[in-house]
Image 1 (cartoon, rainbow, N blue to C red):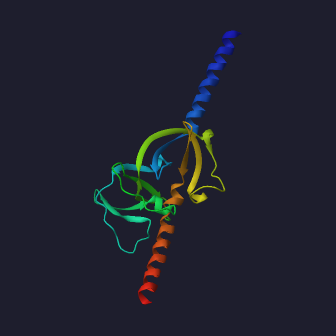
Image 2: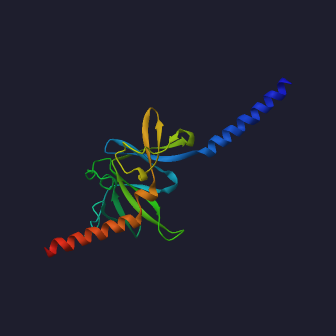
Length: 187
């Protein structure tokens, strides 16, 4: 009887371990303005050092410019600016995280770079440790937050890539900026 219970216990332990593995997701954590943020590792293409950025006129303020990534032109976003804060200063540890962003056309993706102060680590965070975005008190728009996790006693903001890097919304910001430039030059 004791052996039977032990066997059942082993099976259930394996099932729990399998369920836990399925329920955990991996996130790349990074620092931005003294706060820790993360993006699902499934969206990350690569991480490169900050260099060789070309500014493009009449772009929204949150777009720092473009880079040439193996022959492809990739826009680079300043996340701090996107969050309504001052632009991120470039420091020795600054990196550009290349993220694959879904477009309005179903099944298609666009690569976009995001400037971060420094990359920290890839963490596996169980979904049970992720809380929903707060409806108040966040320093960024609530729809930009996928959730908040507590890792090693610190809060990590999990970003909703589809919302933060929305090509449609950034395009609309560019149109508004271009219209403002036309009005300013006419007056």
